Amino acid sequence: MSAGVRRSSRLRIGTTDAAAPCYGCGAPQKALFATCDKPQHEVPASGAANSYESDMLTRILPILGVTFIDILGFSILLPILPYFVKSFGASDIVVGALFSTFAACQFIAGPVWGNVSDRVGRKKVLIVSQIGASAGWFMLAFAHTIGAVFGARIIEGLSGGNISVTQAYIADLVEPAQRGRAFSYLGASFSAGIVFGPVLGGVLLERYGFSAPFLAAAALQVLTLGLTVFMLPESRTGGDSQAASLRQIWSSLTDPRIGPVLLQLWAFSLSLYAWFGVYALLLQAALGFTASQTSFFFAGFGALSVVIQVGPGPRLIERLRSRLSSTIGIAAALAAFALVPFIHTIASMLPTFTLFAFSMAVARPALASILTEHTPENQRGTILGVSSALDNLSGVVMPPVSTAVLGRYGAPWAGAVSAIFALLALLMGLNAQRKGMRTASEIAAP
Image (tube, rainbow, N blue to C red):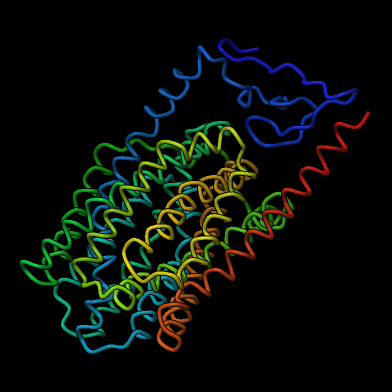
């Protein structure tokens, strides 16, 4: 057994061993907090835990820094874009259609770029994505028609793939036992960018108009490109392992350990993208927020998310394991959407956004950890690209639906569509949890 790790002793309950998942991968074991036979899944001893986490942070710190600057630029435009589109006299439906167009392009591009990253490495694909984003945001800054706005989003969407490739980069460098925490830190870098981006965007918008925030976002994307080219090491090369065939990829997608997780992630994504498409319009309709106020509020949401993602979020995932943690996170999202009809003041809005922040900090990292554990190493980019494509399919379908519901029925119904799909994802998670408990009981039986 390797130094600095230990196997937990078996806990006896009556005459039967307590069944529990492996510390590293969640596979059912006979002993509480036991691990399977994979040495990298052993439980770190208390004296080695801090060193283990420090080593993990050192390995992923460059990609976290690149991600922070990337999202800083992206979050400048995210709260502003719906107001920019409506400044042309467009309706709420057109706002939703713009989100859907971008997502449709990423739906096509995500699995392709993920597969390319499995073959040639993650860094090259990140560079292509950042070049496309820079071009798209510069185009937005000088767009004077709705057609030009759509063209800019199409270019950025087709060159996209950075989210799934970034997740694959993390999975390349981090062992299964620490992936939930690592994905939480990745989420924290996203949220930290969201803290400062909307504030910067709101200030620039108030002083200089719409072009200034878009130019700032483009400049930050160019900075991200430079950091990736000159400072980000490659996590994988094309020679690390043989590229997977289409048959192997299909076999993985239909694997009972992978397919249901992808479907649950998709159901949760349908819920999230319905919310992403409508939340800025909800703040305007229910509370009379302006574009700048929405940006500042988004920054506050990002700050809360960072606190959860670097604090209680990863600790919860490690303590309760990924499956139970994801169920709790999705349940929190469902509760958040159920409270939307009661939003009439800023105070009444806070429970919804607090629960939603908690959900994002726990559910997504936990589900990503489950997915990457069972994905073959030479297919991580591809499988995560498929997951990203399903995310983007959600982005195609859901914003027009949720914005249409808001436009027809008013602000109290803004969370209804999200609540339906969050409930579906929750039921899928509970079913998977029940199957896992049944399997664990069978293993524990004499």
